[in-house]
Length: 238
Image 1 (cartoon, rainbow, N blue to C red):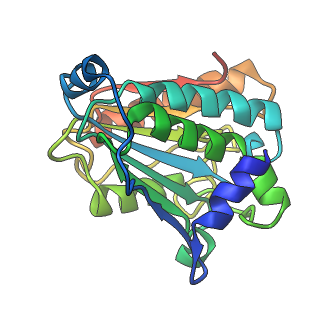
Image 2 (tube, helix red, strand yellow):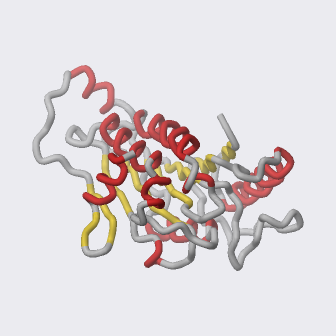
């Protein structure tokens, strides 16, 4: 877990936690390994870490490790020229979520190395919160985060998957999905047309209710398709 703190500390600059991964000196690689990675079509993965207080990711180390391992598996499959972006979200406040990590897969940033860095970061979220590097937040603005992602990164140029490490319980001025009667609003048009997939890992975690998990999955499945995503995956466990 200390690796996670070291990672976040190392990327702190001017009050903003950030990392732009480049390697000054190339590592020696087997030609066959390079060829295999180069032949995989490039993709984009955007990872959102929900650090609101309701999300078990912020205080359950075992769950955070499980999420980190699954996301790392996705990153490990990427080919050259693929992009990886990591952001935190919670409150609708840029100052509260100033962490970002952006890199492109290359000879100098191999997928297995980027996957290891992302895994350390995600699995170390509880320690980063406990140590004060990240601040857990009182609201959960998932829709606002997705809107910002669509405007700042988008889905053009490469097949794009957005992965949210979140319980999926929107708690904002849009909706409070903690209430059984609440519903997500209808998207304005199809802002994610062309996006390959939305995943929510940890859907309903913390509610200890399979009924609630099913309800949340139905809400997000409907919203995802209306918003233009080609596919939705909402997992409570795996």
